[in-house]
Image 1 (tube, rainbow, N blue to C red):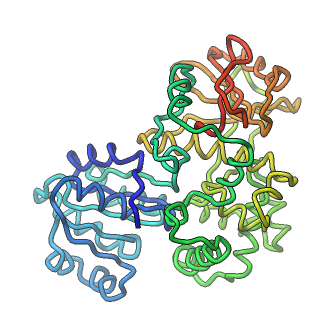
Image 2 (tube, rainbow, N blue to C red; image 1 turned 60 degrees about the horizontal axis):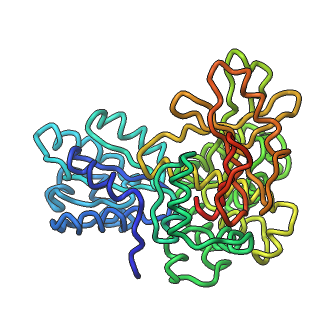
Length: 409
């Protein structure tokens, strides 16, 4: 399968030169071990690769970590390390004994759980890098930088990129951003995402929750996907599936820990006291959402009731990925107050608040940004804002508001 260059590669290379242990965490099938193997190959020092999906290797790792590292001497790449948390204590010993940078390359499918394990045993000794599915820039073989509101950056991107219509954008959302799909290895999306769901529930969910009802958990994921880009309402999700809110909350935590969903929290400070408290829910991969919500084609998805939600989820996830790929914590929020004034996205960067509205239209207008002024009450100054939409050209509504095509993200 043809390798797809990833935006995170320079960060991986630089990190491996400084840390003995590098842990790449993210959902299944996003290319974690592939990225690490590629970076290792570029370094010119091939190393052994071990996957703990292999039950024999897993048994040795769990029962005798010291022997495991005698059989597989560093430097070594260990895939799906969450299956053998016993390895972390042994890795700590080897690092303390002087293991050089680039000795342990680890991947796993449960980001937060792995961060907990690494924090307990390897605090200060491990670099944790999250990886999500392909960004649009990676998909287009033009890895983008962290999101910015610099007009010159977007003009340069525009000069390099092909313009995309709303039809093109929804075709991308419908297909999703898993590398194996993008590379053409799988063409039947229903079969691919159906198998993905089955593997995810059988391996990741049951590792975290025990003997969960697979059909009920799949129904739960559908209820969650139907609410992408909405404020979180745990009680409503629970009612849809027929489970208690406490169980729904625990299951949502599993989806977040395993990189299926993420949240934007509302922006608030002392001057903006009337803001709501609930976060908004987003899914990392639009293709999985399209599968779960059972849209039959990109066209019906774009024209349907969830068209706007898909567009918002797509844009927010693309911006989120752009920060993750640079090793940065996404400085992203949303704004909504009790007067129902809402701003889809607020980026807090360089000492300013940057308001962003997300629209499916190709023809934005100034009425779409009428709520940006509410941020003027904040003690943090308002900076350049934007409408991100299906326009095909970079432009501006006024001196404070850019128009950024979603196809350039």
